[in-house]
Image (cartoon, rainbow over all chains, first blue to last red):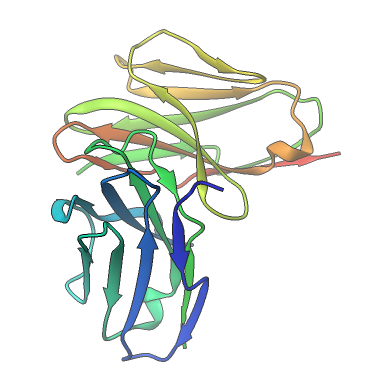
Length: 113
Length: 111
């Protein structure tokens, strides 16, 4: 158990819908990272927040957005969902700005039908 | 564009065999390279390599980085069925604070 929690574990929704994935980092960690893992794209970095501020952006679609709240939990919002958004979404956390030795949560499996 | 290539894509061995997994990369502002093991769920950290030629070891696993030739290898000796997993490498780019993951090597160890 890494100490990073993600909810929900599984999510099944229809195309065009919007969902919110939630992540609570390890106690004391200020950085939260979001990743998407699909069969064809592998594990891809989406976005990083540090202490409430966006710090780094990867291959995140405009339909996706994220935020980190004052209590340091983070939410990833996915809208206008498409079949291709079906994937495993991981959140990870680290103490500082560097992603080295970040700890991954168990992931949320999103299925878009 | 940053590029990370892992080989082989898939490997099937028997318990007791030794395997070598490869990771080559072309990224700007390279800082370190990380190896992760992913079983059914989240990736777990194995190694971080920053300097060339210095082997890192953890039990039966070892890894080394060659910054001149831009590659790293992960060795697993005396493999066990519990080593079956996807092994991911990820260069860390200094400027952007992000990890770029390779597509992974799927290792299957049969008893």
